[in-house]
Each structure stands twice: as C-alpha cells, then as structure tokens.
Length: 184
Image (tube, rainbow, N blue to C red; front, side, top):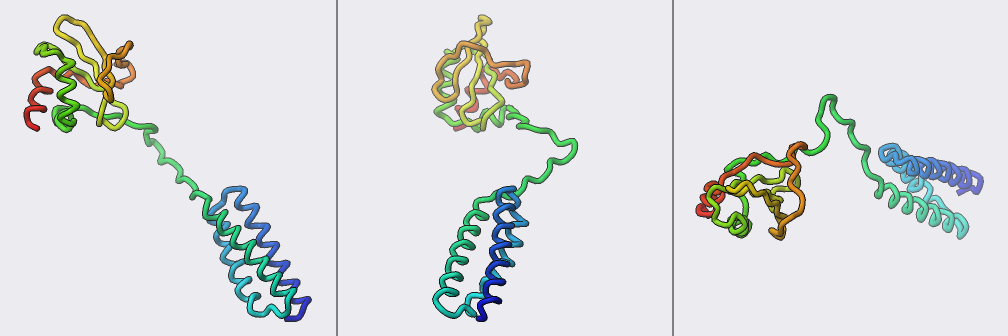
C-alpha cells in the first residue's frame, strides 16, 4: 500500500482507539462497543493491504492495541437502568407464617424446640432479614423471660430482636413448631 495512505489509515485507527480509551474511562459500554466495531472493521481492511516489514509491524501493533481495548471493554459493566418511580428501595423482608416455619430444616426445628425447653406456653418470633434458612429467633417463655438465639449456632444473644424496625415476625406458639417438626 502507498505509504501516505497507509499512514493516514493508521492514524485514523489510532484516533478512534483514543476515543475508545476515553469512553472506557467514562465507563460508557455501548459507545465503546460501537466505535470498537468501526475500528476493527478499518483494521481488517488495512491488514491485507500492508506491504513490507514496517507496514506489517505497524498493523501487528495496531492489532495488539485493539485486542487490549477489547479486553478493557469486556470488563465494563452495563449501565444500570433507572429505578421506576414509586418503587420501594431495599428488601421487604421475610414474611413468616406457619407454612414458612414448616419449611425450616428438621435439624433447625429440633434445636429450636430444645431451646424452647418443652415449655408449651412459650412462643417464638423469627428475624425477617436474611434468606430465612437459619433465622435468628426470640423465645418468650411462659414465665415472661425472653431469650434471643442465633440461627446458625443456636447460641443465646445479649440483645433482643428489634421489633420497632419490623425485623421480627409475629409470635408462633410451641405447638406450631412441634407440629412442623412432626410433619418431617
């Protein structure tokens, strides 16, 4: 290829690469991809026209630069969609009912019942945060004593679950937990 035309094509590709680089810095994924496709098409056109060692080395250097840009574009994350108006932010929490209590594992229910100490007048409330697999829970015994336990180790905690922030479920009597375990 005629050296002046080759240089002009190479410089045009380099200018587009600089544009892509600045778009990557701005984390603009879609715009980066669009210009990258244009750059790659121009490079594919230029590659077979390269004649001589200098032009071939120049095309190879461009391919290294283009591949590097491709990897950087691949690391960009797509732009987040704006939240809908009026949508609530944050998790709503777990809603506990008898069916949900029945979905707890038998091992969890056995340890919960042992912590209730066969007090048939005791009630239990579950924490509403997390995934609901091993929730923290609070037992109120028939003598009005309240003890809070971790869900993972069933160890007593010092502070009660916060009822004001709606992070605690309704109270379930001993019989509900006992019958949930009996069904398993």
